[in-house]
Image (cartoon, rainbow, N blue to C red; front, side, top):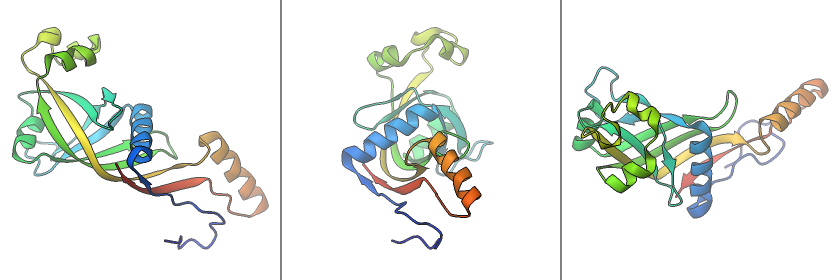
Length: 178
């Protein structure tokens, strides 16, 4: 699909599949570190949307989170495992929207692998806290908006473009199909 923006002088769409999509998801999730994690049919006060820290983006593209067994989130996931995740890496670039399926587990080896002392803020009994659950999100599809060459190059191109009166957009966007 061509851009409807007639000032866009170069290709700014690139759909990614398979390992290329997984690499983009991992890179953006690791850079953002947090996301908005949305469940369907949210019954809690946040209407099913809450900020969450990504503890790991693994080689298979799975995103790992830690959650309390007695949370609204876990109750909502028991009814419907479909989730949406929204990431923002920077002020002007690095946006990612993902549809996925969440699986809740209590794998002690994975909890041990992902445990960080700061998590004791929520799980006061440490990594053996009986309230700890893991959420493993498998992305199914998504969309990203980013820059081709990083924010510094994108910013420089915008300044030069503004000075010479020409669009020098460094953006790239596309569908993700892991």
